[in-house]
Image (cartoon, rainbow, N blue to C red; front, top):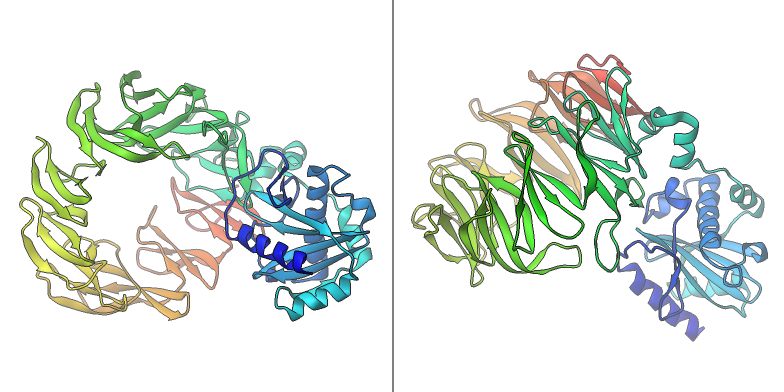
Amino acid sequence: MRKLFCAILAVLLIMAAVPSLAATATQDERGNWQVPYTLYLEVFEPFPTWEDVTKDEETLCRFAALLIRDAAAGLRKSVFDPDSITSVYITKMGGFPMIVVYTPGHYYWLSAYYGYLSVMTGDNGMDPDRLHSLMEEKGYFAGTRRLNGTKLAEAMTWQVRTVANVLEEEGYEGVFRSASNCYTPSCGWISFQKGDVSGFVNAAGEYLTDNWNDTNPFHKDTGLAVVYRGEMNISGSFSYPKSDSVTHRVLGDYGLINTEGAYVLPLEYESIYSMGEGLYRLCRHDGTYEIYDTATGVSTRISGYDYVTDGCSDGTIRVFNGKLNEYGSPYEGVYGMVDLAGQVVIPLEYEAMGYRWTDGLINVKKNGKYGLLNRSGKLVVPCTWDSIGEISGGTAIASRDNLEYLIDAGSGAILYAFGTKYAGRVGDGYYYCPDFENHMGLLDANLEQVLAPEWYDIASMGGSLLRLGKKIDGSNKRFGIYDLSTGKFLVQTVYDTIAVKAYDGLYTVEQLGYYGYMDESFRMVIPAAYTDVTDFGDGCAAVQENGRWEIIDSAGNILY
């Protein structure tokens, strides 16, 4: 039993970590196996809750069967032989469900994680029922019960429809209808994703596809979209390109397409990011960077830097030299600015730097403190602040010793002491200011209080309109819409969420776990009846009902 209890501690330590996806089954120093998923994530989310898998006997048995089948697919039969299983139990450990499998003389603990199936094995010389009873007495297990053998046998042969099955049987329409994610329409196309299959669909039911594994929505300013073909990490409803575990280089290629599906840039890049101002940052697989100008179709190589960031502002680009972290992002070094020809504008001497100029200023960090720099490279606000936030109207919000201040952005002179931390701007000319229990209040441009500190969230919806959020209990929140000019609520705090911006004249709202749309008069014009939705764009939106995606117009009529 002591050996078993030590093993439990090892499992708890493993559960505290978020592992990366393993390429093949691997064994750690404790003898535990990490096995890639093959079927489990087609049905269940990573880190499922106890309630998710025990809601009925069929779901429970499928949960157990898929973990067993994935373990059998990833391990040699000499390590794990599903044909010799004598009994299977479900138990709760650390708040999460775990399957315990017994074969003659051995036990296996099967647990679901983000990137892999964790399999702990050991010798067993005790009756399973007696063992589980002792584990419950010690407080290690809870809710233990043995699975029905007949139902488990049925689940072991249950046919899981993978993404590949759907694509083969139903084509891209089948993938779209059952997609895990759809994105707001842009340039007439909706990007959709399920597992390692991605593409675009429009309201006429036409598709743009080329065996892509990931796609980004079209950029409205350029009419272009970034697409990817290569290996993917798949984690429940989330998927993202996979990187090599040693070099951290992406195991695939990015390209750029137009709205006809033609390639503007071929699939041959490590990464492609929109920088704004009609520019894209390109990174090749050898780590070299280029800036692609959509107006001219010309790429300019930016050399001599370890990292080129993905933002452009007023014709300048932030660059970095120094150490990169395991994901290839800046970790420790210095930042500066170059122009589009690669000429240095701001020398590389700052520990951190914003990437966008505001009123001709940008925040920088030196010797552990922040200040404001102008375009000529002069520090107009010395680096003496712990942080400096958004600049607007000649002022900025800066912090020191966990207190926020409104300062003059041209000199650093203190204009107002908020007397608390986490103060910030709301819209044009207002400031939110929490009390020491983090309840937010609102100050006007004269720094006079207009709302008492009793709100969980305050956000501008433009003009005199605010979205106000209040905590009901625990993590439950309710939102409404308040008009500062009248001092009255236009919408009471009854919604789970309300978007702060209307798209095509419609706000996305959530009520009691379902989504719908409200017009700019704050009338519900499309009832909250959908389990998932996108914002409106180009006169349409993607909505999900009963697990099926459709495209609707602004009156709620189904277009496709």
